[in-house]
Length: 114
Image (cartoon, rainbow, N blue to C red; front, side, top):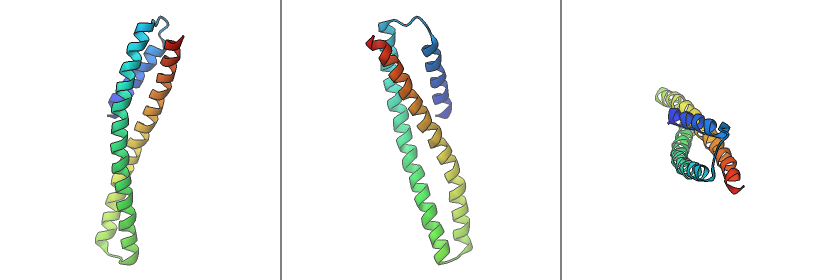
């Protein structure tokens, strides 16, 4: 998904710097952009839920380690933290990408309204 988002952002940047955009072209760009924003928002929501669940599990497991120190719980905390880091990174990329898509939408909507 990260690669798809980066490719789409590069495509949008290329369209943004293009000088000859007509009203009909911009309307098509906006409708395509809205569909892509919906796809990426859905992906972002799913990853937010997964990230929050992993974070809650990590905190609960850590609290379990504090209350009853067992080597299995320490290993589980370590595993959850190792898995949590890539989820946070991926969510960060999705969040920033969707925010960037919003700026492209604003840019093209302004062109279309002129």
